[in-house]
Image 1 (cartoon, rainbow over the protein chains, first blue to last red):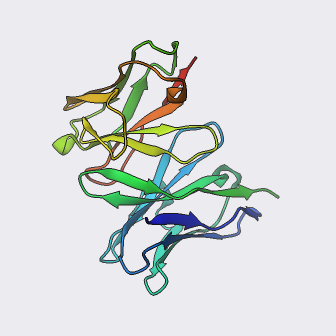
Image 2 (cartoon, each protein chain N blue to C red; image 1 turned 90 degrees about the vertical axis):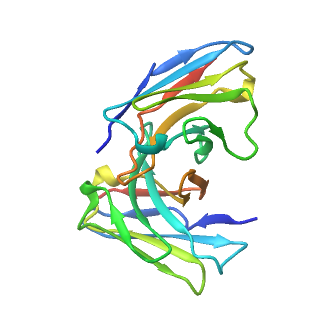
Length: 117
Length: 107
């Protein structure tokens, strides 16, 4: 049974960068289509970006130039790095496995990122 | 980008009652690639329905979805205590994969 296990909570200062990891435990050999979603406290879900099995990436327009999605296939781990952090980036960040035709079928447990001076 | 508007914002019902949640899109959703997610406090979202009406693995049949084009509905036929949560719709056909703002289903 594959699970997506994310890295722990982070506290960063404005202007810094954060890198969140998402490991596909239970099967590190299959390369997944992984998306990233964030949720500020008390707010709705906000899609951040995607990386497909071919390694292509894309992101929501508001994050373009500020987010980097990468992976290390040898260890089945996916990464989201967000730069130039500001207070409004404080949120829980989720990774999710996407299956075409089905949506986001499996989610990580979430990583809390707090941006504060 | 497709904007999804959910209504109502909050729905107050009792166990055993029927819940009807709406999701309206700003433009036609290709292939009816519309999903519904359930989220409880402190937990990640869980996929309930995809393709507007297909239940995800393990989802009980009291959850059903309908609609096409721009108007979609999630129905919970008889509410169980564990169904009180936030429900979000999402289109996922072509990026950007936008979400609705959510409907809180409360007792």
